[in-house]
Length: 304
Ligand SMILES: [Zn+2]
Image (tube, rainbow, N blue to C red):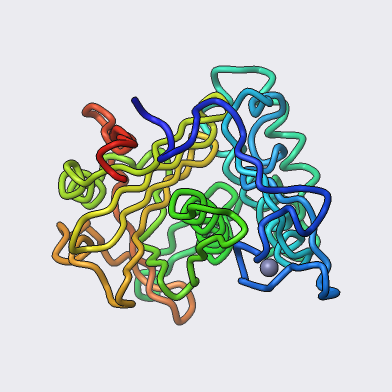
């Protein structure tokens, strides 16, 4: 069985109630107390925003996690989600298998302004890097709309905080929280690079770790897996809109994990200078073997 530790599959888990006293008492993201007696504004938060994945793919029969979050965290996350959603879907190969998704991708990318390019939408944010080799030669690389790097980390943190609270909490009025400093962000890889030796080695190392959450929801447009070893903390992986995989860990002692040390080198090559910046490139390696990143069986008995 796959799924989520101590919870049923294929339905949302709801901690939210209109009354504050019957909801979770702390914002799962920043840890603010949300109780009645304080004036902190809070509202309903969907861990996976409906708008984050293609329209209609996240039905009421899908897993989601609904709880109370402070309005500040909720609004900040919504902004990040909009950006990650438009930039992942526009780059996703899912566009080539469905006209509807292709159209949706274009609509989103035409409407959403790119935070790194003031006044320009995502679709207008394709770019070109001009690289100089000495004083003689110049080459240009054209690249698709890029995803804002710190937004990837921010959203991964929020998704992992939510699931961590869900699977480690016994009674949600006293929910467990994951402090941001314990989250270890390793890297993010786009679809053309899911077979690189770093990822394959991480998969190999975590193969036997007990699995506490393995969710594929929204027609496969959202995936998350979390595993925990007895002595090296947690491993987690996310996949967004069939395009971006983000991986990392949770280190209970606030130190880098063994899991991510001494990984195979990726073949970076220096490619000259752009202004004062060194440009380096490497070949991306698509996945040519069986996809094992989201393999793992959650056993509710074994893990109690
Ligand atoms: Zn908050």
